[in-house]
Figure 1 (cartoon, rainbow, N blue to C red):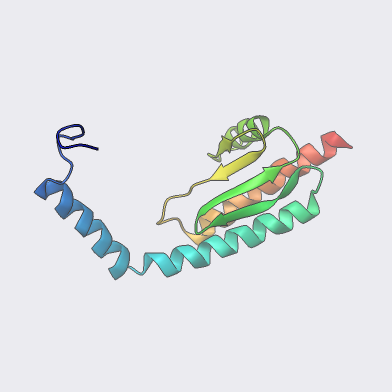
Figure 2 (figure 1 turned 180 degrees about the vertical axis):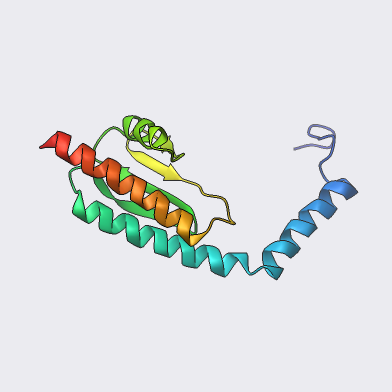
Length: 130
């Protein structure tokens, strides 16, 4: 970029910078990063178990923290529509991955409920594949 070629109304302003600092303080004070790592590992383990139980439907999870993708063996968009009908929001990423992006303050109980929905959907897809 050359001077004057890029700008924003609020970028770098004192209010935006203070808000960013407040977010960083909250992340540190509330210990969010270790919590996110722990919850993400817990969720990935559960998704891996579901993948192992339904290998015709799910290949397996990957990710970091709570940003997790599951490679699918069925069309990801259709599986996402099924999850939404069951009350779980997820998004397709490309044609073969279902991406989960829960909020950083998600509870372990909510993640287990989400995994249960994925498991039920995978079981139904598995039955339809046989």
